[in-house]
Length: 304
Ligand code: ADE
Image (tube, rainbow, N blue to C red):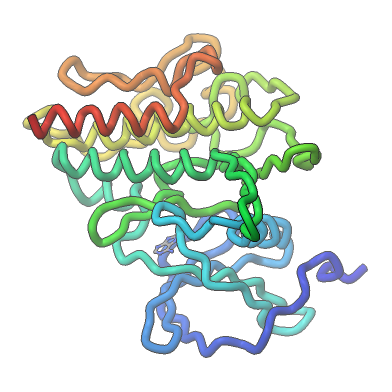
């Protein structure tokens, strides 16, 4: 059977893209820094076996209203090569600072930088989660759950505001339509909410959005842990739970830690408290709108 049979139709003529260097390797494919005319772009190359993520990701980027400040800007897709060595490309804007994870490895942040990063990230996630009704000739935007939210999938602009990337696992919830396969155990173990690690099997829209918010809580912790405002001696960058389970936790490690022992990343006494994103009780978790409001509140307090 032709593995390309279920792919979207071949887009127009090839863009004149010059690949420069590999910038990141993800679960699906490799991200290249590339040049298109006089502009740098990012090209994510998906191997043919990951065509489903390539299709899902472009499907999300092409939704109405997705041109948002805090969502990575989509440029287009291409199919390169012939059937035997077909490569699926997804072209987006390029961000010189790379991902939030890379940025925090190399840099500490001030409180005002933390506020800018956390606020823009929450704004992006609130927008993604939001359903926007059809108005006039503008179509509706369904609520979208990311399902692999983590610091590697948040990119940093030159002004240090953030945008959300990597929609290969995302699910859209169109009213009255089945969102498609919705089994729970996808994403990155370290960022999985307890109900996901427990293997709960059926999640509805709100349950998926709350799963994203748990992961958002982990990323807020990563930001706080590298913020110079709270502690004179900020430690080296660490992934969430790295202290507890190291670099390569198994699913069992994460289940024992997060579900059975209900451990969460350590909050130092003097840090800002934001633990309501990772509450065990999914319904008690803050929404992205509430996180944004909290961050705005901290910012207002700073100015007065
Ligand atoms: N890493 C992953 N996506 C990227 C992008 N669009 N720009 C820069 N680095 C990236």
